[in-house]
Image (cartoon, rainbow, N blue to C red):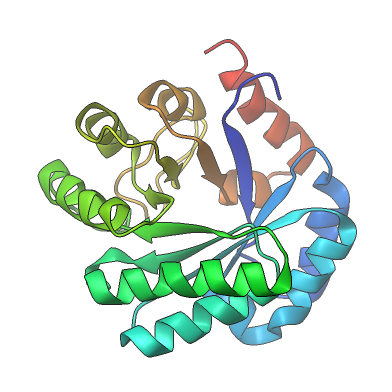
Length: 227
């Protein structure tokens, strides 16, 4: 891709066969695949291992939220699976976030692997919220050592203007201009996300439900080439 922003395909599918279909069809054009709670609950680490054997990377989107020790152990396990990035809820509090960062760093050093990016969830894009609330949560997460945050395009611009530290923005709810919102409240096109400062764009149904998934991906990719 000519632009620095990267497209992640959300593997929101029901079977291992469908996972293999999309990964085999779209890699290496798409190099990062998102594994969420539905898929991970059904198939566990074998999904991550399959994607990594293929040569692609994994965005493990399990949105950890629990007591600090439990989250730290979960992060440690995810680091051992060599995922590229993972999510946790910033609303879990500063102790939980700091313990998660420590766990990721220590486990990565122990295994001599690259530390996974820890991405904080502010407010889900299926919910309505105020940019001020998202900004407040994002500042907490980044101050605790997270590598970045998940937020919609509407909040991305505000975060870039108000947070001076370097950080990553992951934006879900990416839709072509002609697509519907489905269950997302705060959606945007790929070009809008790039202009707002997003580093990673998460696309799901517009590719998964397309008659030609590769063509659908290329259309989205084409939107950001000249941004």
